[in-house]
Amino acid sequence: MKTKILFKHLILIASLSLAFTSTARAASDDGIAVDQSKYANREVLPDFTGGECPNNPRGLTQINGNLYRHTSGAGLAVHSGLVLITTEGALVIDPAMTCTAGWLQDEIKKRFNVGVKYVVYTHGHADHISGAQVMQKAGAIVVANERAIEPIVGEKIPTAIPDRVFDKEMTIKLGGETVLLHRVAPSHSDSMIMVLFPKYKALQCTDVCENHTLPYNDFLDFYYPGWIDTLNWVLAQDVDVIDIGHYTPATKKDQLALRDYIVDLHQQVLDLVRKGQSWDQLYRNVKFSDEVKSWTAYESMHTLNILGMFRWVSSHRRGEW
Ligand SMILES: [Zn+2]
Image 1 (tube, rainbow, N blue to C red):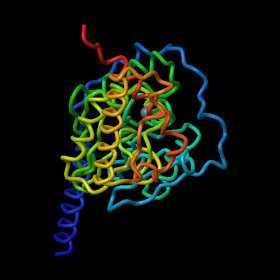
Image 2: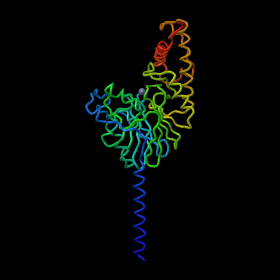
Image 3: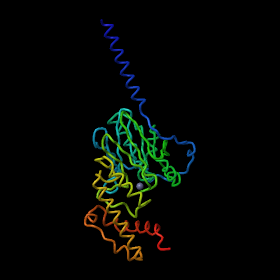
Image 4: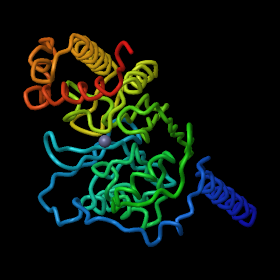
């Protein structure tokens, strides 16, 4: 009898460990492998996020279930990304800073006893993707759109070269969870992707989405039609929470307001340019709604936003000839 029970236990243990092994093997993605040897001796610039930063704020807070949000920096300087915790390891979006990436990795290990399995880049800008080299060295697979490699190499950004890339879509399966990566039209950079967590109705929409904030500066690395297309794509998704890579998480309603602002700004600047106004006349004649005037950074950003749009409009019209 005792032998029978022991045998039953052994079968149970064996099937449990099998189940565990098969789960462990389930992590997969349909990305394309990058030949890292091509970039082994590439030149890199000094890492502006690499100095010691013991006083730099950092955090890892729960959004819902296994979905978390990491932050580094404070106030308007905060950078953020979603983090998915699974039994097979964590998926981290945009570590943001080298000086906090080690902390984030340790924090995930300490709280959840797993390593970072995947790092996903939203786009090839240094202020979001710095620090990934720390996680890649510890074994993480770094994923990006294939168009992110050129600026990383060309601008000599001292972060990880992606291990796996994709053109239009990529799916990552990790610990029974599914993460969808979707390339959108050039909008803010031409390597921009959206990252969907369908189970949590959550989306990572870095730098293209806002939360009662004006887009940064003079629309750096900007493509007007693709930005609007991307916001329309965001509005069509079944999502409740949008992490925008900065500040605080937002909603679809906030993106509708942002789209209306950018469309209106574009139309006003286009109309004024067509009237023959020079920059010095034009920037004084653009009107902002009371709502936009109430957004964070309105005072410091609104003239720069006009300037960025003025540049876009000026180089995308031909006139009557
Ligand atoms: Zn950016």
